[in-house]
Amino acid sequence: SPGPCSPKEAGISVDLIHAFEGKAPLLGVCLGHQCIGEAYGGVVTQAGEIMHGKTSMIAHDGKGVFAGLPDPFEAIRYHSLAIAPDTVPDVLEVSARSESGVIMGVRHRTLPIEGVQFHPESIMTQHGHALLRNFLKMGREVQR
Image 1 (cartoon, rainbow, N blue to C red):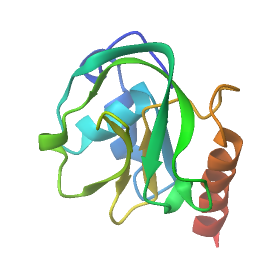
Image 2: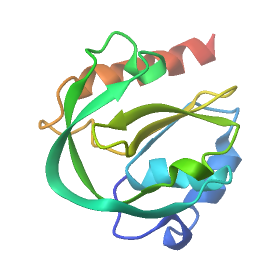
Image 3: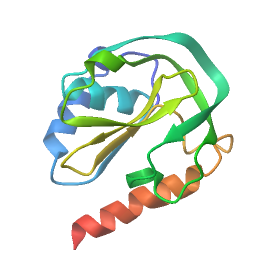
Image 4: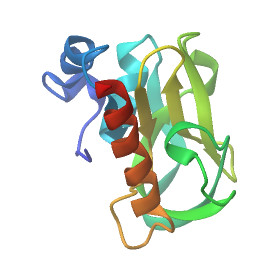
């Protein structure tokens, strides 16, 4: 969920990712996305651009939560921090980027864990509800 701090200041968020890994699908949004990066060894740093209430085009790989979504699509952003590209750990893959190259999505390579830097719950994000439906579908598939 969004928050006014960095993952290091986000209380138990990083610990919860480890506590639930493999037990339930996880979707991190904004600060939650950054916490996923940090939980697996990435570094969260200044994004190089402050994006509070601004939209960007998001290019993605068409997998996981992005399955079936147009590429690219417009999404609303509220952040000034991001996962540093040169620190993405091997266990995560970059699933989406902004037109300026900022990491907008990560996915765990073996567990149902995904993060998005933008806000799919916002009316300002095109296809955000479809992305959330894809995540719910992941949950149903894991339960089987």
